[in-house]
Image (cartoon, rainbow, N blue to C red; front, side, top):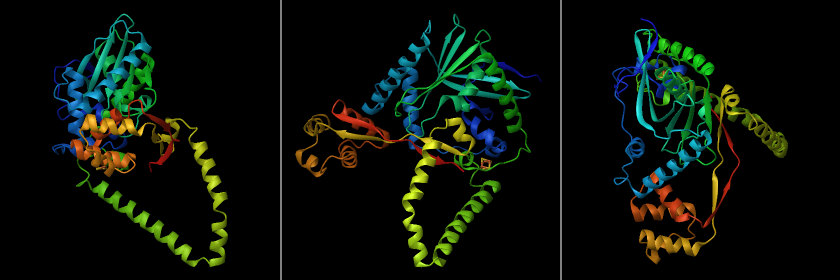
Length: 372
Ligand code: SF4
C-alpha cells in the first residue's frame, strides 16, 4: 500500500501510533509495540487538564472552578496575541480535530486542540493547549507539534505553510511560534514515515531512557527498562561510594587545601553555567541538557489589601490570617488550601487572583538540567 493521507472521522487514536507519543517513539522504536494491550492509568492532573481542555473546546465554563476559568481566560488572551501576529483572515477555530495519515499498512494520527485555516493565505495554525504546569516547551523542538503540522499539510492540500504554538497559561514569557514551510514539512514527513515504520516493526529495538520510559505503560514489565534502571542505580551507587572512598583517603591537610579552592571552583562552575545558558534549546538537547526557566520571586507590596482580599473573597477570619504568620507564599498556599479545599494548580490560580495588582514579580536566572 502506498503512503498517503486521509481525513477520518475517527476521533480515537485506537491502537495506532499518534503524534502525542512522537518524541518517545523516536527515542525507543519498540515502545509502541511494547504498550499494546496495556491500559493507561488515570491521574488527577490529567483529569484537571481534561476538564480545562473540554471547556476550551466547547466554551462552556459553568462547570469550571474559578481557578480553571481564570486559566482559560489567560489561555484565550495568549491565543489572541499570537493570532494577531499572524494577521489571519479567519480566526474561527476547528476544535479538537483528529487528523490521520496512512504509512504503508499503518495509520497514524494526531489531535489538534485548535486548528485555524486561512485558505487565502494558504496558512494553517495549530494550537496546543498545555493546561498543566510542567516544563515550558519550545514549539520548535516539539515533535508532537511537528507531526501535527505535517498532518494538517497532508490533509489540506491547498495549505502550504503551517505555524504551530504551545499555549501554556501557567508559564511566563512570550509564546513562541514556529512556522513550517512546504520544504520543512516535506522533510518532517519523511522523518515521520520512518519513525512510524520503525514503531510498527514487531522486532523494533527497545531503547530505554529517562524520558521515554517515564510514561511508558510497559515500564514495569519491560526487561530492557528494568535492566537499564538497575544499571543506572548501580552506577550511581558506585559513583557515590567511590567519591566517599576517595575523600576518606585524603589527609586533613589536603582536604583543607581542596576546600580553600572552593571560591575558584565555584567561579569556574558559574562561568561554565553562564556559557551553557547562551546555547539555544536544540544545542542543549544535543548535549543531553535542558533549560529550566528561573522561578519567579514575588514580593507583596500591599499586605493590608492581601488580608482584605483573603477575608472578602475567601471568607478568612482574622485569626486564620494571623495564623498564616507573615503571609509568605508557603503560608498563603496552606491557608488557601484550608479555606477552599483547592489543590495543586487551582491553589496557584486563586493566589494569582489574590495577588492581582499588589505584587512585584522578579524573574530569577534560568537553571540547567542534565537529562542523561
Ligand atoms: S519501558 Fe522503556 S525501553 Fe521498554 S518499551 Fe517502554 S520506553 Fe522502551
